Length: 277
Image: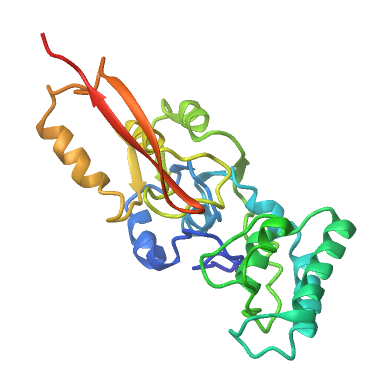
């Protein structure tokens, strides 16, 4: 019998493991031959569970962030982590990796990058940096403090994790347009959260992009994920009660001023004005 994962086999920012059991209950409301389209596939967990629960269904997994490539390199990642464990064995767990050990860590990373032409920086970041902090190349990682957070065991190979899925890699709007007119389709919609760190995603995620997502929900069955940081539900409720306001900033003149909080943090102040009449 196929193993069903309730959490992604490799670290991924924003995976829905906390929702897994409730998500399974939601899936039972749909017929066995449903087409599920995972627009923001991420770690593939939603797609994987849907296929396990509904084996006769068609499940489209949009692997825009290249998670399957990370899975393919698990043997090399385990090999690298085994060597890193040897390097940091003199460093207590959760303590900073400093001095000679720190330099040996970077030498090791460079060696494996040269050998395989690929490093799973998200998994590596979770192994030598604190939780939810990721750097996607060696140069950026050199600027950060390193800590011994390496897991003690290898990652499982999980060769069947993506079995049975229709895997694509495209902008979510392209995938949506391909399936929007298919009867009975259910869209799985887990976009990067607004007002949270989205540095590990390949896409540049703006407010306008986030607000575009609800346009795919109208008239379709869907399972949608968000957080209270985004205030998207409150915003949509407000729009629903103020349908005639339009865009109050249309035809405004905008003036911008770049402000500095400190040596490495800046933001842009904006002034918009329009004379009515």
